[in-house]
Length: 460
Image 1 (cartoon, rainbow, N blue to C red):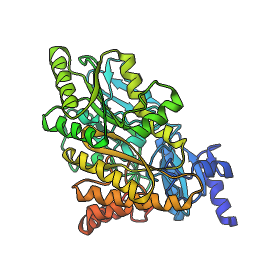
Image 2 (image 1 turned 120 degrees about the horizontal axis):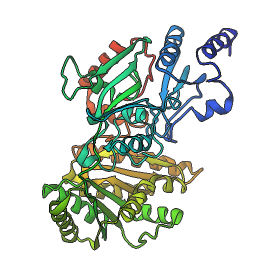
Image 3 (image 1 turned 120 degrees about the vertical axis):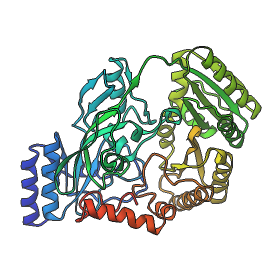
Image 4 (image 1 turned 180 degrees about the horizontal axis):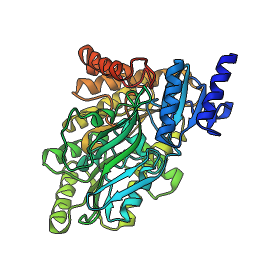
């Protein structure tokens, strides 16, 4: 590092006293998210920001020196969107972790980006309110990161994704300017929907430093679960397609395959079945007789599709235990080796065919592919596992990854349903979007970030 660079980093330390990290351990820890397969280069420094103004001053410092800025939440991303690149600093928002206010009458909360999803949900529950988006990583992922990737979740088949709940935000632009986007009113259509544009932009257009999110009443829901074990992934896929065809909108419809069930149970000892090829977990939350009737319809569909031991559960603890298995599937598999995570989304009617093609990709490339899915909205997460140190298996895994992306697009799907493009899905995103749409993206990026300061090379 040159004398000038050392002097510049000294100035950076003045902008965030005691929170501009340059030691090797910190640079390594903050250099990548949970996407182990995506490239990264250690950053020049890591800044643990505490305020919007501090983020703005750091971005101005970087822009003046031609340094790139990589925004980061909790680092739980699975696409490499928070991976640092050459000549970059990482700006972590993890210390900006306060719920600033809750407006009960208007049903919204204002939160900093470092607030953990579950912490926000618990906070607003004390006011009788509910924040629906619930990614499987809700216990560890941040609201800012959820917004950056437009995260979905287990109940989003009925209640929608993060973008559906973001009303307003404070954003630091690539110039260091601070702007407020969106509105806090129930309706508002003044100008372009720039807040909606920021959601899912993966930190390439601005850094979100405050969010106003819409809330729903906590009361009025009565949860019931239906579980069914299936003799094959395809049979479970048939049940998913049949649920959609019947016009049933469950509060959740999740798939866990045999590999995931075994991995979770060996780790957590939840007494899960070891002989099922696939498990479907459905949740219905309509109250009263309507909820009972809908639960019966879901159970009938499971049986008609070949499900066995179809059971209903109304006990809250039992429902939580079953869905905990779904949430723990990814970390359970990580114990087996590096996991290359897919995040494709296909039409619900194409779920059986896509599951079959995933199995073909596994067989043809001699790799282990486990499957979890937000099956109710066609969002599938094939998890490709390669043993540590087996470079040949890693190459085969990448080939299977590309094959799955191509099959997804062939079936009319999209290459990412909620994790974002990051670095892992760049090629697939370009295939999906096409050159005219890529040029639109590039025009927007250049208009808001002409110097390419914010998270360049990510997202499209």
